Structure formats: C-alpha cells, structure tokens
Image 1 (cartoon, rainbow, N blue to C red):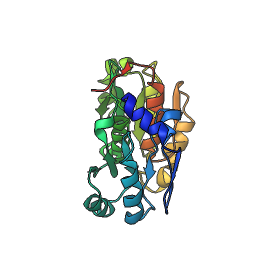
Image 2 (tube, rainbow, N blue to C red):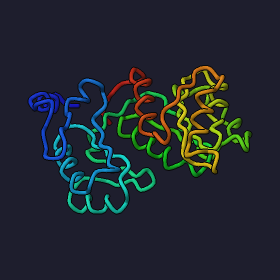
Image 3 (cartoon, helix red, strand yellow):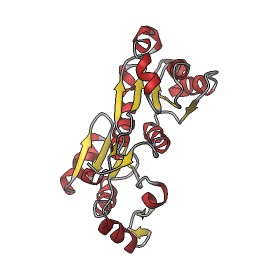
Length: 240
C-alpha cells in the first residue's frame, strides 16, 4: 500500500455508517485482512450500497455467497466488480492486492470435483489476500494413488487447505504426509448419513493425524483467512 493511501485510510473514521451497515474500514490495519461482505442474505440493494462504499477504500473488496442473479443486478449498478461464478464471489479493487513475492504457494486440495465450489471460495479469497495458490483437485481417498502422487509437493508447501465431503478422510491422510499445518474444510457434499457435512466435520475433528485443524462446514473463506495468517511472515509484501 502506498503512503498516500495509508494516510487517506487513517484520515477516515474507523466506521462508516450506511443505512444498511456499519463498515469497518480499519480492519485491514488491525488484522491485515480487509472486511469481507457475507452476501447470502443481503439484498441486491444492500450489496450495491455496501460495495459502492468499499470500492472507495484503498483495499481489495470481496463479497461471499452471492448468487448469480443477485450478482448480475449488482454488477449492472456498480462498476469495477468481477463475479466468480463457481466461488459465488464478487471482487473489486484487485489492483490494490499486495502480492507476497518469494512466498511458497498455499496448496489447495479437494477430495472430489463436487468440492470445488468451496475450494474456489478459498482460492479467490487467498488471491485477494495476496497469496499464491497451487490447486490439486479431485484427489480423494477412493483413489488414494491420486494424492500419493503429490508427496513431494505436500512436503514443500507452507500450509495446506484440504476440502472434502462424504466421510471427510482426506485431510487426515494429507496431515500424515506433511510437516506443514493442514486446514481441513468439511463440505456438505454426501449422501443421507453425510448429514449435510456433519459426518465429514466429525471425521476431521476426530482425526488422529497431528497438525490438522478444522473450520466450519463449507467455510472456504475461513480456511483461506487462516492460511493467509499462517503465511503472513513468509516472503515480502511487495506489490506486483
């Protein structure tokens, strides 16, 4: 971030009051991560108001869980936003992203293709937080050779985000193959006794593999924020 941008950000009050929200513009100064907008239950009008205000700030803008229909309305009213369909995310001010040069990539792994929307939420979030990401998709334990083929990459990654539904076994396998922290993301993918992701969640929480932590069901955003925090001191925060 440029000095002029930092001065402008400090000049503004920490909270901007809008009719539908109170925006925390200083969150990135406190935590290193900008305020994100959870868009699933907000109306298009509320998103237009909030994102228009956020785009005036010197940091990246992101909104999660935005339907395609809602995104179409918002993008028609607000310039400078990009919709990521599979991740269901809106992003803006991407020229403000501070890239961390020299930092190894976060490894992002899914058990199956059906887990990709949650993984893409994590990938886009990591991108907006300036982190490099290396995806390995569809490498679940039903074909264990698929993940075993990447043992060298698992050993070299600084942190791994592993997304899995069904019985949620993949994060345990990966955590037994790497010295790095592993963040397990249970998804709501699965048949009846999967119970909307609870089977995967409980399987990950009961793992005997050391170094595995678990976020909430379908929470790709939360996993990305944790991975970004873990890698904060790796590489330099130099803008491209």
